[in-house]
Length: 495
Image (cartoon, rainbow, N blue to C red; front, side, top):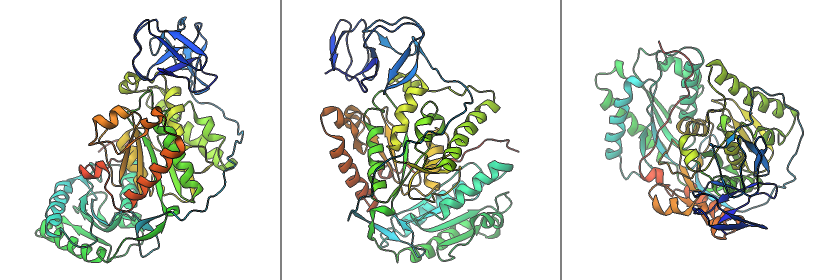
């Protein structure tokens, strides 16, 4: 089988390998002679499609034909255009899951904090309040990592630099403070040094108002302008944090404690066939065990948003989902930018043609579970189950938002490949085995095995086991390579 027809309603199929002109390929009852070369991951027409007719994939329209397409022709950007429009009115048509909770004895080895929350890492984090002290934070982390190497239970000392903290106004300033405060409070950090300059808008006194209550043994503050040698002072404070955090040891924690973020980047024509459905199956399984997942990347819900809306657990969540979608469309419109300036060049090269196609693939990461809540950018997860999070498609911004929302781990599916990592373990799942084998230094898990006959049930169980191992201390590839970055959403002016 050289092609895959995903849904019986589809009038296109996906090439599982590159198809040469004249080659005869088959799927289900279809046997098609390719009229031109069609690259792996791209679409082939299964029947004649008239100009103006819908292109159907996943059982849904992904756009319409801009010219007559013959059976066996390549179907892509040159002959397909999106059907999507601007702001839309939506009607709540509940289609809720009948899945039941599943009793399980599955556990991971985590760190139980004094407030009862659970972390999967016991690291020391250095978080600057402003970009002016980024390099200072880096130097402190480097010196402290060497000085305190080998201290029992301490799993690393890392800084999370960013370009903000001053010369920001309004919501941008609040976003910076909120994301940084959420990271300070994250249970993966056993101790945190907040490093300020002294004269910034987000000075430590102002930041404490956003941070709220904190344990002074776990969170230390340093104002660089107020000490003679901030490097020495910073290393000394890290030493105090190391002493505090070293008391925590890994203990058995039920899998229901896990909060896992769902993200994709560098998608290709197999994303909606392998890796994203696998992430969705994982999400459903974790939720059945009492755990939580968070789905973000709002622009990549456009075109598939009604599927999520109709899974809203009640009308209030439905209305919040409608607002989530339309607010993000209005954000684009406020800058006179096209709402549907997507997929990316890499997506198109990988076989994705329209935003509907990308979104129908992307939203599969959320599985089939009910949507229990919608979080604003900077919110922290509140409910067990599947939540939607306001955030852009940009990989680094979205990954940071997931970490700041309380995710212990992120599942990041990719067909083109990416080395990205953020403040929490970021597990890369390849859509195809070629990527997994070729970029073994980036990719943690191969969803391409689904194309080789492995079942979704088996692969989901394997992924659950892998996530448990990572939650219990095994480093994922991004961690091994030292890729730990954050990026904060910015909308307004800079002074």
